[in-house]
Image 1 (cartoon, rainbow, N blue to C red):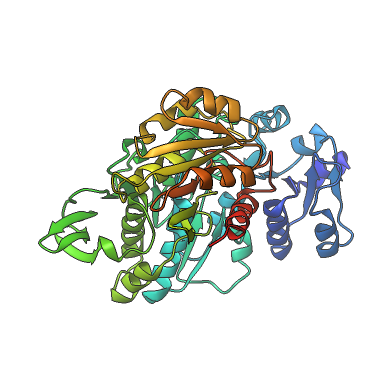
Image 2 (cartoon, rainbow, N blue to C red; image 1 turned 90 degrees about the vertical axis):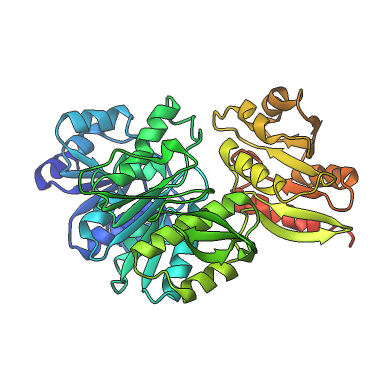
Length: 453
């Protein structure tokens, strides 16, 4: 087989996950020869692949380096690092190694709106899609959430593609050429994959390669990338904006989201909780304006937007205690944003009881300390890295150990008084206890549902 690959010059798809399957579909539609390899003996999607592509083989198990060296092109799934020796050897031999997003950008026939960041990208991607549709643009959303990007190309071409992109996807993207691109914020994440935050930051900045408009967060200097001569730069932030930028202005009757001096809507009209979601709304406004769709209908969609499931989502109030599901907070920065956003809404007498823990991904939990104000009364820690979290924060907040998520909820309820919040914002991945953050959030909601009214 290695000899066949070397002479026929096919594309090698590395990794048969959801992304790898979408690459196979795209190449099949383009009538381009390909072969799939996966280091797992039995990838979960192998039956799906076999059903969709009868007669084609997926080579499972140890990868033959000769397959990679003989390829015309390697399309790498985002879960696999470029640093793998076999991939480095292929690169050194002149084989092109790209990801699905680079493949998508080369084939897309409509402008791309590209969104990344350590936190908030799912909220902003969803919000941009809903606002743009309400404002009269046809859009397709996907990438790191929902539909894989290449599967979008099988549908009728929209006015815009709105993509959420991860740092893993951007590592193998060289020329996205987005109509508008944003890095919402940067905080340490995936430190189990990156050697330092500079390497993580560099991956995120690749979203700006070829971008016509760069959107930057005035509240986070790390969100600004290198600016090409012909790139337009606009900004958003939780302060007064310049004329072409987005921010907050104070009028006699309250605080407004605005472009320059032009008030667009009262901040109090946003359904989503927390100042971090005001920031997300401003970013979405700016992106939708680049699409020519920021009008009254788009603003109505913003007002009605309930937020993303598992992201600072109020799920119940029982016996005066409000329960908030922020299970999607899988890194320290996300939890810090939630705490800062929610504390600003509370009176001095209201307290937060915080549920933390899981797999820390190499995160520095001491970075939670600025968010652990006097209004955070207790932290209930659980999961694989519970001891590490406790050690980092125990001198700042009362820490209690929990044997499970349900046990953490029970302890938090016992500690809470009417008016308090119980916040699941774990600052960790969930795979030590659950199949994903969605399952963790669902388990939290189920535990809350079982509580008496």
